[in-house]
Length: 356
Ligand SMILES: NC(=O)c1ccc[n+]([C@@H]2O[C@H](COP(=O)([O-])OP(=O)(O)OC[C@H]3O[C@@H](n4cnc5c(N)ncnc54)[C@H](O)[C@@H]3O)[C@@H](O)[C@H]2O)c1
Image 1 (cartoon, rainbow, N blue to C red):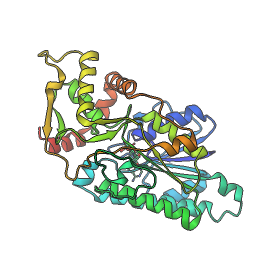
Image 2: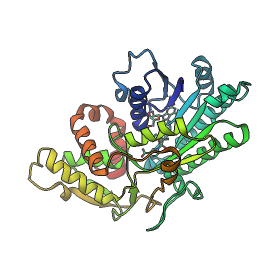
Image 3: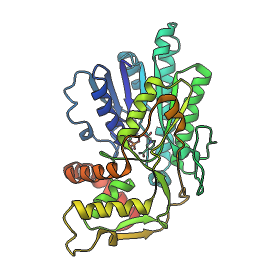
Image 4: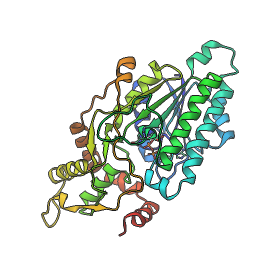
């Protein structure tokens, strides 16, 4: 882990990962390749600009020439691949970009790694390299009221987003089996925490509730997700990078199932406590509005994280109560960041999605 290529490092999880790896491994060279789509912001990494062991490259993971060039110029030995189109609703409205970035982009990176690492006759070099492909639990489909996703659960993706991620997982796995590329895959549950773009459930609800706007909740609000604080996800990735076996998949979860409605109500209560009251003195839970459900909305995701605990020794360290409190505080203390990432294009998307 000397020269690490991080893709999508200006997004939510990638930026948190860069901060973590920088603090734990100050000697690593970090190369962050990010296209800076609407979801990526350089503000997420402010403070790193002058670090001589950090380089930012604005570019597309589908650009084979650029990716090959970075691999050889920077002697990349480790890839942590976050870059993706990641919002399910956007994938329903326009799947094409998801197919391009998530599938073709992953393919481009795998090809570059194969060309760079596999012809190398030195077993030391090959042994020392890693391609960690960051994926989601959504590839496994939807659960009923019981059961958990294990690493052996058959794939059953049900949205263009999860289908594109599933496809990229299969490619990554095939590159291990066919070419011996040292690939490791992680499938993680829903993340929350600082730097998450305010279109995802938790930051969206914080922002709307703070300003006394409606809180749109899909369907009956009873869809269940297994929530993990983002720093815990990042520490799991670091552990897997160092202890994970090539060709293996590790599920990462928070052991923390919550219904969407429960999450929204918790945010309302925390804001009533931590932020100025609404002008009319109402409780923020009164802003909740049930809206037409997302097409094909998966009912429940839940992770069985026994393998990563037993083989890697990783467990989440932040409880939901601590994590959600820290997250609400972060969004209250970083209003400038929120304003800066919410540019015109997002506002337009939001009003198309939820009306005025
Ligand atoms: N957010 C979650 O809850 C969650 C859970 C499990 C897995 N994941 C996975 O983790 C990864 C990161 O998710 P996130 O929530 O941080 O996403 P995000 O949308 O916040 O960030 C994605 C980043 O990728 C960049 N990007 C997009 N297309 C690109 C391209 N063609 N070339 C280069 N850069 C590009 C964007 O500019 C952005 O910085 C994704 O692969 C996602 O599938 C996310």
